[in-house]
Image (cartoon, rainbow, N blue to C red; front, side, top):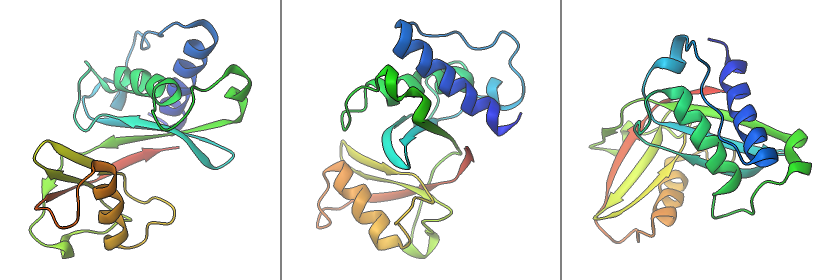
Length: 170
């Protein structure tokens, strides 16, 4: 499975949905990673700036192909931080796919590395997620601060931190 196959599937899903309002089906013959099950994030950028990013921490669909299709559409049309992508923008968009490995609770901050691990912060029913290796996030403190903010968790609250690795396709 090549990087472009996953990215092309995300692009095709978004283009078909934005142009025709249809959700594509996964390819009939799934190969390699596309037939596995995992959480998947699809991030869309326009001229280097984030345009949408939605994902699942664990699988909710039958396979990674379906996770990509549904999360790509959600990134383009349902990310509450952005307006829905319009047809004129499609040619300017770039996609990245992060396939998540199982998360693990950490005992100490020394177990974190923002370049290698994404994090999940949890306090009660609130949780926030931050993918690894994001531009401008080069230390653990900043990574935790942003994840807490996304979750609406105060740094004074008791919270747990989980780390996870991803395989990124661009």
